[in-house]
Image (tube, rainbow over all chains, first blue to last red; front, side):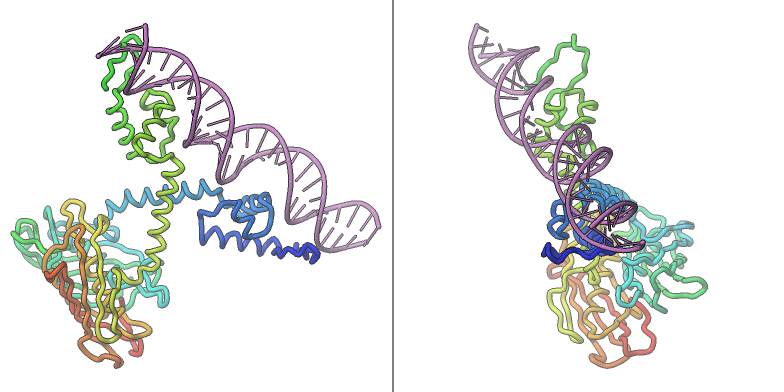
Length: 203
Length: 203
DNA sequence: TAGCGGTTAGTACCAGGTTCTAAAAGTCAT
DNA sequence: ATGACTTTTAGAACCTGGTACTAACCGCTA
């Protein structure tokens, strides 16, 4: 229930609900804040802060830091596995491959909710490199068409087809077509250098 | 100095140097280990563990977690600001722009230390979009050449030039040339849709 | 035998909490 | 104003995972 605090106290306090909301905001914008600091900001006792945290299910500072550390540690470990962007669900080396990539918050322009091009490229490029059956495969050149914008939440399915020189040295041509549902949203033609050639160029 | 412990103790211990090396390994492979756990693994007292940590300059568990949390927090924050990949150091809207991007661990293939193509593309693409003076700018198509591989630690300087339709509706052509030092390492031609046009395509 | 490096033990103290009990203060209906 | 009720505050005991410091001990060697 809302409470009207005595004006005599002269202390500006918020009703419970608003205070708890503010608490969430404060911790959100600085997860490293201690309860003691929060008492200063919210002008209530440390016990109130702690009751609020309990009600809201917000763990203590150390627990928050531990969670962040663990999360980042897991990420670092999986970053190594992230040689490929998107999940490859089918791969026939030197022939074709399919990968799925879901457009999430971090992939879109915040204003428009439209995926940034380099993520779409990254998926296609990764797949093109993966499909080449070679020690080292690097993108030499590419020709891209972004057919229509891809939005937050859409699942982008990339299909790669090796168009030339399968199993042979030098450069391979890979065509990648990306779809959302039935609709083609991206098309790219990649030239990939293979390791047996003398001068790999990139990727 | 090396010590030969009594065999009578029956306890297998390592000389100081090797123990400290092992300590580093253990903390390295699991940064969340407590001193107490380390006493179990290394069969020495907790004081020895702590002396070792001091000598080696390894902070306590909580400090380690805090550092990891802070590091990851900074990353998350910079990801948010990462509407543009690379630091833009010069921008003349509808004319030209320059950005710098340093190739770090997370940008390279671990095996070859060569930057993955999509990062180089991301820098160029971001710059091409940024240089267009419009509400919404999306990549419609692109034509890329990865001239030579870019390695870990190299600073990639991308220069973008608007080639057509400056300030006018429809689509703009942007050429991006990326250099390491004097050497051109990447070249891309982008077609960018501007918001005043009816159907933006991507980026 | 004294000295030295390395190890261990123990105590006091710390931050940043949790858990629990209890009391005080504010609010509302009657 | 009174009693019931929510909300806030206080305080003490306890916890983890340490730091800081003092003191002792062990094994070896000069």
